[in-house]
Length: 497
Image (cartoon, rainbow, N blue to C red; front, top):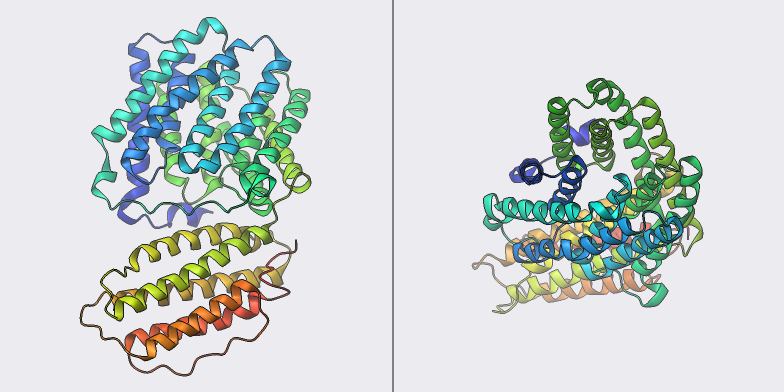
């Protein structure tokens, strides 16, 4: 875990800039709220709105990011009104909270924008419970949200829009298909609602004041997951990060006693830590989130070791709710999800090969570069889906070894595809008649793997010195080697159904 934190590569210092900009944007939002005369709850609301605007908005283009950021208050203000208005009506409040939870997860079907708006809606309801917001506070909270989102947008799109100097980010792969309950986002919306319902009821039995922590834990465990294996691993990491964060909070935040200047410095460090570690370690991110929440409770004057113990208990309740939901309610198996992403990656391998071969044959319209970018995105999804199988706590070594072999061979395929595309981009590269035969063999191998046919895939003979053929033969060899782990014990069943 320490290695992932301190040794993880940061090409172009992207994570460093992401985190530094977050501290600047959130700090500006809090200062603006202070200058507007807002109370501490208003400043906390504004700071959270700015954090979400800078953290969750992930459209592939700057223009798309700006549109999503502008839509955040459109979603957040009505949710905030409902949360505060139902403050004295517990049953209606709880049912509304569950509805917001389910809708927030279901919104992922509309891609990054739906995901961002769903997270913002849920967290707006959550912060209303955190601050015990009531209707008389609404004008101030509305203003805090609007001013803070505007301040965050000013930093992100005006003062420090480093994305404008970068190549456009590749669009994330489309979610796995399906209709009705066959659609993963629909099933997860039902699961998240059921898990949040369990967390809400049991969390209120644990604490009538801090029950929303359990619901929040369930919600965040479901974020960015697509199968029960991913959800269970994320739940473990959340609990581990919370334990570490509470330990650090006892050492750092409790002695500060909410003193304004030291707490402000600590909050800035936590914000930087959240943004800097999010891409490499969910455990580390949760450590900083827990320390941030601890610091805010110190500012509110209610921090104590007992409160931190209660947070751990509520987090455990939330993790249990998520685990029960993914195991018992419309389960989405790791096998099914992994199988679907591997098949899409293999089809993309074939598409890359066909485009590169057409380019070598002299086609002016063939361009394999976008396909390579798509392949990288799909392989990222495969790694995420297979992560539960290669986790250190996985008690099945044979399946763990098989999953690692599949990942290694898929990486081999990607390496050969990138080499082939590089050769095709060379205007001096010549077309060899043997390319068509090699591409046909690649297509046959992909069809056999994705259709689950049982015939063995032949290993290619030693390639000639022609660079394009070298990469094609390497690709054939990797696909042939993939047949064994994907078909053991049955078609791409890396984990039992």
